[in-house]
Structures are given as structure tokens and as C-alpha cells.
Length: 181
Image (cartoon, rainbow, N blue to C red):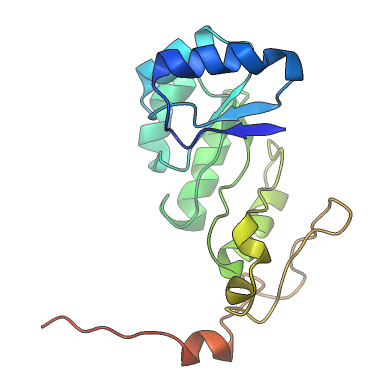
């Protein structure tokens, strides 16, 4: 079980919450507070649940301080906001050097899900795949030609070339083009 906090709690509240649920053997507390290295260090040092962060941390330069102060157990980089597949792979490699696991943040289209599944297969520190509720909505499934869903708790990476997915006709027909000017 992962406890998602969406960075909505202050540091002291996050510590109090984590201590209150410790008996339930929570796997990770995700985004317990606003992601800053010092605040994260305070939280991680005062609880017995591993801390996951990353969907609001971008690039290896921002992750570096978390690795150096050992305040993050699981990184959650988002390929779409972290600089793409190559930059995300670099962050994951840095995490491996600091013994931190990886859960790619996948909270958007099936296109990003396919890219994340490919990347996860190349990571020695890959721990768990995020399957967000958005992946279950028909409006989201309709955006791409292929729908990757877990079966009995497991999800396989794409076996077709490229990223393993592509936009559907539905996505093109419903795209809104805006112009500035």
C-alpha cells in the first residue's frame, strides 16, 4: 500500500501522519510534503516509512540534493516533465547509485504509459509501475491505438517498434488547435 499525500501536508503533519499509520506497514509515503531537500530530510529522518517523491522534481540537478542527503527511497520522475526519456533515464541511473528505487510517474496518456513501460524494463532499480486511475477512463484509452492494462497485477511492455503506441484517429479528430495572435 502506498499512501499518497500530493504534497498537501506540512512537514510536521506528515511526520505525525506517518507515525499514526506506521502499524499498517505502508510500503511508501508518497509526496508527504512540498518537495524541498531539507524538508524531505526532516520527514525521512523522523518516520519509519520510506519516502517517495519526484513528480514535482525535475532533472538530475534537482534530484541531486535528495540523493546526497539520503531523504528519498523511491523516485517518481515523470517523463513528460522531467526532460524526456533520456533525462529520466539519467535520473534513474543516479538513483541507482544511491540505492533508491524507481516508480515512473504515469498520470497522463497511454502514450506516456508505453514509454514508461519501455524505460522501466531497462532499469535495474525499477520497483513498481504506477497504474493511475486515468488509465481506466474511456476518454483516455481512446487517445491511442493500444491500451496497456495490467492483467492479474502484471503489465507487459509493448512489443511493437518505437515507443509502442501512437495517437488514434479519435485523438486527431478531437484535438483542439489554438492560435496566438
